[in-house]
Image (cartoon, rainbow, N blue to C red; front, side, top):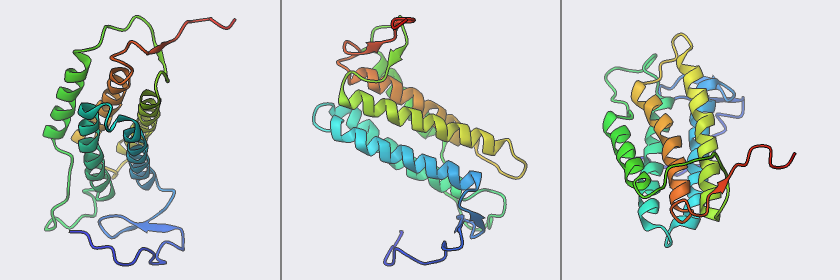
Length: 193
C-alpha cells in the first residue's frame, strides 16, 4: 500500500528524480519521460471519461480498467530490471492485460462498419478526447521503443505490446462513441486545394 502523507520532499529540487530502484536520474531522462508520458495518457483518458461516463458505460468501464493498467505500466517503467534488488518483486505488465485489451478492441469493433477513409479527430467531445488520448499514447510508445533500443535500458515485451494495443483501443473507442462510427469525420484528400 502506498502512503503519501507529505507531498513535497525537496529531493527533486536538483533536477533529479528517483526510479523505483532508488537510483536517481535527471528529470529529462528518457525513462522518466516515457513513464511521465504514460501518466499524461492516463490524465487525458480521465478527461475523456468526463464525456463517456453515463452516455457510454461499456467504454467507460473499459477506460477505468485501462487507467489502472497505466499505473501498472508506469510502475513497470520506473523500476527497470537493471539495478533492481532481485529479492524485491516488481510490478510488471503481463500478457493477460494485453489479451484483455485485445478482446475489448474486438468487442467494440464488432459494432463498427469497415473504414473506407482515414478519420479526422472529432465528431463528438468524447471521440475528440479519445483521439487526443490516442496521440499521447503513441508518443509514449515512441519513447518506450526508443528506450528499449538503448543498452542497459530494458523495457518488457508485454509493456511494449500493451502500449501499442492501447492506441488501437483508443482509436476504435473513438469511433464507437461517435454513434458507432456514424458521426466520424472523414478525411477528404485535397478537399481544401
